[in-house]
Length: 442
Image 1 (cartoon, rainbow, N blue to C red):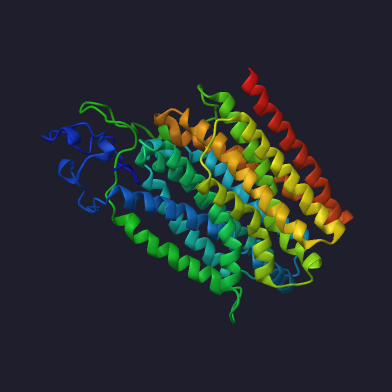
Image 2 (image 1 turned 120 degrees about the vertical axis):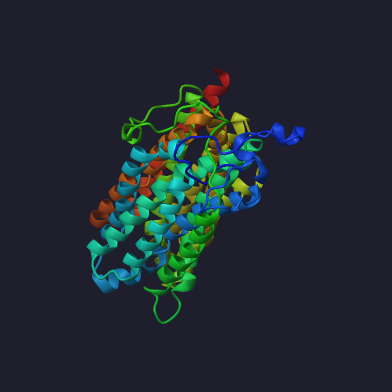
């Protein structure tokens, strides 16, 4: 089966000498147990479906954890005297920790294997939960967010590449799972956090429960037999890593092939994640006045509507190469943002819900189609590296735009700040829709 891990020396892990034609034609990472030289420690030769499930679960849990605190930020603001700007800074700390690490080590799983990054990431995320659960200052909250960002950075490229390795005959399914787990985790985070924060210890229980789930996931990840990433290697092939310099940070480069598809996917992701970040950081406060409630669950549901709709659209709607459909998707995101802002001015909660669902579903259709096309054009031997470059651009959308909105809300109020952001984001969506259509005519 494909990789969930390191096979450090780069030597072959299977001898393809079986008598069955179906076995002889299998690539090395999908070889059956009898053709593998199993390591002494990790002997569990799990089925491919189990390996896919482990990758998906790791990615989903990591993204849930990164957004678990969204519904309890109002409590943290009261307890620690934080402002709305401080909250946006905490979201940005996460991204500022994530992006440099993703850029520096995104190629490591191409050399070391996928599990070499996924397993430490899961363990690190559990420690981030512990820091957050015991935080009594802004600095400790920022440290917890930074640890969460590093954990997601380690696993993002590796988990996406692992799913591609495991499903070489189903690239569309691999892309669907990657995006659905990413968007689904971000959407579920606030809801899970709100549901676990209803007890006597709202600032402790969500993080301890999530940390326990991560530690449980570490057990099968540690036991499963690792496989070599990439295609079959000859017996006399040199090791993948011959010197520490092979692990040095590399300059991010655009893919040599499918570059236009890469840029369109990256641009769409940048704008989308800017919208997602503003929603997650400010939606509870934005909706509290409109809905006349301070319920943590209501704020979490509002924050999750956009991302949940995106995740469902990515799971249920097949990707398309029809540029008109993709352009309509980006236009729909712009329209959804317009409805959300109009809801506050018109005091119509229905517009808030309608705009969130419309924007999320349209974004999911457009981004997944562009993402699938971009990933399909990537070099399999550099899939983790190129996918990491894509996610670096996408995650940057969750940094500076959120800080700008938070700073503007301090000086001009929340509604004017969100309105100005919505205008700029909607204009960017329309511009990307035009770029997609121009590509069709090229």
